[in-house]
Length: 562
Image (cartoon, rainbow, N blue to C red):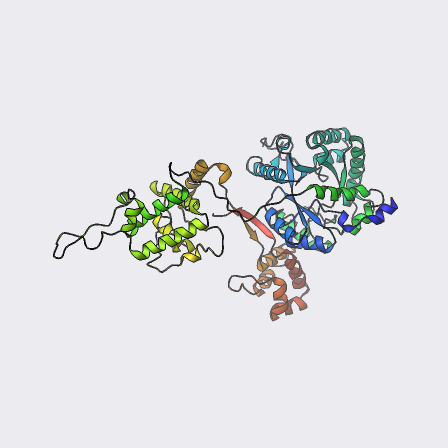
């Protein structure tokens, strides 16, 4: 055993249980810092397992791949005590933690399905799942039994070994060799903040593993990056619960060291007697191989009339729309001295029956030239369907009296958008550039800013859901992050700094320059007044030091207007 201990390398250990700032007001770790820390400490892979969400998965994947670190995408789910659909007060607030890691593409798809169902259907205090959902969606997933607040951990903590055995047996039946019992590092006798209850649970988990032939793995349940971030993490928990740091009965994790521990420390504690707990983390990492294709254009197919393609149908709609917008009687049809009144502009109904050739004849040369150019760019970039979709739901809404804005942002530079009634601004009249909206040299999705009457917005969304399917329509999350002044105010409140003093600290911070916030650490070096306050006022120094650690952390999330 001793020989094996010395043969273990930093790369033999992988952190499989980590909470980032996407575990809202519970995790302090920022994704770039996590990846950098892991690489610096000689590890080659790392997992992200936030509470009930996959919000940070793409940022994490891109950061890790960019740093040549293997990303393991996971989630710490909440398992309902009964069914995820049971939401009875007094009975269903209880839930249990469980770690799920995606092994492959099927696993990643299942992880997304589980997360979606948990948030949309199972939400009761927390986004919850249940055993039935796990039985249905466990393909491609590795399952870790979870912390002391898991089903197995809680049963062992309560002295119910046989119940824990039954629970572990059920999970093994579902996941097979993809199920692991999770041993937590802060339950080791030599851990600097050893927790007696966790030590007891760890002992029983190791016994359970032997009896049921289930492999065990050691994790750290990290909520912040370094040991010195512990106080800042306590401040974050106070922000979450509305507590003061001095409150004795507040939620606290100060008795535990829940940072991303250096692998050497893990090896030193566990390597002699239980080297397999370390190497199993690497085995799990080797089993997890997912590749997320980014940058693809994922647009639903627009159903066009029989005999049409998206390209031909878009062209027909555009030229008819332009004939209505710009069309005029052909010059030369009126003889000199003719006193009959001039013809009225073409009606929308008449324009809708024109052929492309007939519509083109009615258009001034600059309009025709611009339309040909824009349609060519749209075809080359394969966005024909996108314009048809946007025009369709706007047209549907306008036909029902729903008020839409005239258009703003770069889309107002498109004559196609004007022809399709997506916008009501003539780009030629105001000399607006199409290239600000779509640029063939910089391929990116078009972004049409559409203002919809807020009291009837949901009708438009529902129309899209019914037309394209609920699996193709989604809202977007928006995150509110702590800027420097907010961080100073939050820290001051938690530390019970008098309001007037806290307000003074916050107002000393330089305002954003052209909308860009200056990092607090930079201002503390470059702003003379702020630097002087920091160096001469102990209270200010403590507040600013903690605020630097908190700055940029996600404080809230909501539904984006898009």
